[in-house]
Image (cartoon, rainbow, N blue to C red; front, side):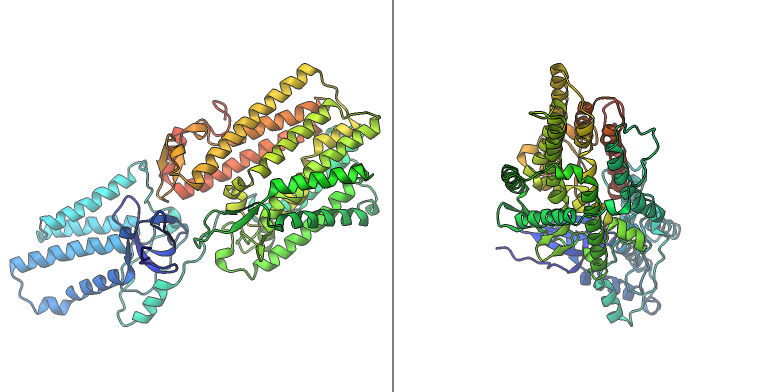
Length: 620
């Protein structure tokens, strides 16, 4: 087995892709298969580098000190100033200055101001390096003290900077961003070697991310609006005329919100799903690499969980359990689940205050209590091996969605004395069941999504997973219990065809994305065209992802349309999901655009020019 030269946690100098510039990085890990080191720059950028692209920090510091000694005033005064010696000394100083600038500049594309420490190394920003190289070239040219070798080094540096700044169209973005500030060279203090070594080894802070959802003020709004909206749609759907132009229904007495039996039912359901989650059944899947370089393990047995849940529910119904209780106590069940989501969010926020910095998400550490409570601070909160975010994302709410739909079908039959559910109710149940089962069958794919990779686990996801999904995504089935809609066979055929088209686009595009993210070098994906980026990753510009930037969103929207059509056009309420989903996906696209432009720079601009449309071809 080959010897690993650099160990996890080592601070080294890494070459920036597409250039000869070296920056201080931290080693996160080593992949023995690809023989690549995973490193992280001070701005949070992670790259995979070959061993020949990594050098020790001590080597650079030694050379920097030797150059400093060779340029001391005392040594220059003690030597004769013959023309030949002056020329050699001048050219050496010129080359050394350019080399020192290239190897010790600050990390490119930094998203925060960097306070320079007292150190022997001189660290310049890319723009300052350009000026330094030009001034050095001009001064040496006027004094006629540089030789051809020094001129070539300077010209090469200038040409590189010019090429990088021209309209920013290259595959790498090495320009300094405005947020970097103007870094100034620090004066050398050779008498503090211990301080310098400690500062070089000190880990960089987590880069901050811009605030989403309206920032701190928006967090207050969403904390109040989201529960109020769930309450509104539940009360509105229970009216004989659920028209949205009508005044909101009056609030029922407070005691009608609470039902101890409903709370017990919700707790039992969550514990039952937790039991299925921890059973040693199914595959242990690797998550995406974290900032530390490690990969978490996830028990992906969601399909097993929904099959067992279906069997248990079928046995309970056969034994006489009345699932129409879910319809008649829909408000009480939603209230109980809301209470649990709030308690879970409080627990998540409190435990995040004691989490290590590398365990926090980039977007939930603003310093504002309300915003961080809403957005979530900790990226992957776990109780031993039990991943709270992954469990809530895929299990109690998602499988509960199918259970509620089934209960609504039974309630429709009971209320209207039917021997079987209506065509509209059957379509809604089957379409949404297919969506959930597909997600659980391909459960591993969720590990590459924004929720799992980037968002912290706080109220936003806890409420969304436990309350929003099961009690608003079931709105079509809830609506049909009191407002049946007859469908003809041609209408049923057309709606099924539309659903299958949307599902095909959704599944194929998501599978392509997941396969590419996990193994871009897979021979099965060799036909796909890509655009390289400065992070070491590539952007897909062919296949499904060459048609629009989010083909999976397109499939999702087509399926949402198929879910709403069985409810007819008498009221706008059952179309809420379609309207909500358009808003959600447009907002996600906006977040994705902002994050990717900041992360990939000019490569993202080139990608946007290549793939012009965002979600709907030739429309949007």
